[in-house]
Image: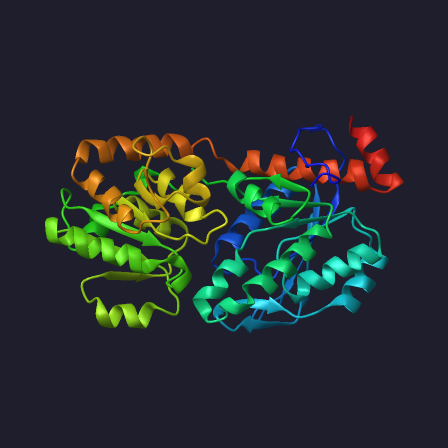
Length: 408
């Protein structure tokens, strides 16, 4: 780190002419995951600030037509499903196509959101053309490896990720905790850019008595909810174990699992009393959050965990390990409850403390809502734009230096 200046996020100026930003990603809506959702919000925000987006992504199965308008243009490339993550696609190498595209229509900066074969192609082409490059570190693939029988590849995966991101002029990470971890592993030029929340969508006002009735609970009964992929890396065992333990003290408590994934069939066969709500999006998802009372999130592999701030914005008391977004945003006992990552039982104990004290649970949920309301997307988009500006200032072409001077 001594020879590489730490990249600080500073505001340079708002008054800038439009940039042509090439965004490369293996996942984008209609994919349902945190990376796709976050990236789409940032793309929309950058467009709103006057920038033009050229988005490169894998073609979805079936009919998929590239979107084009005055400030947005898609380029679709070939892709395949990820073996252990069937809902997502892996972009296949597209070096020749990207070289032809960016040689003819040169972007001002290339932003690479994922590290798959498509992202690697984009990185190689951008370096060949001497384009300014930024990347996102959004998924702990090296941490996921142990949950899919390839833990022996963890070191190789981390080495690849480090090589990938260190080839860029800046890498955006969502939390200071992750920044410190990656810096300790040799990652360079890191900038903390958090994720945002749509507080107009996720809100306590979305609570539905009708939905709660469909779950078989009254207003005084307590509902624990989990939202996310039903997969081993989410540490669902800790959620279910806590539910079983708490049910002995609170027989009427319910657990609702929102999402889908490889563990769903197994869980449904062995836990008939759990409510499986499947995938939910938009207002329907917001209603599920707000209609519960306690959000249970036991993952220890997240880089951020968008669901944490969605639950907080919905007015829920969040129980999570001291990790990722929860570790950054929650003051235990004030706007949520944090458990010790080294002690799974502390997760159940944190939930028990809230259930035992309904007044505390209500106060914590209210404070969680206040915290989430400071995390709007406009601030996140502005910080993203500022990282782009700093890259252009330090590594841009003469044209981009002039662009910065014009906006000064």
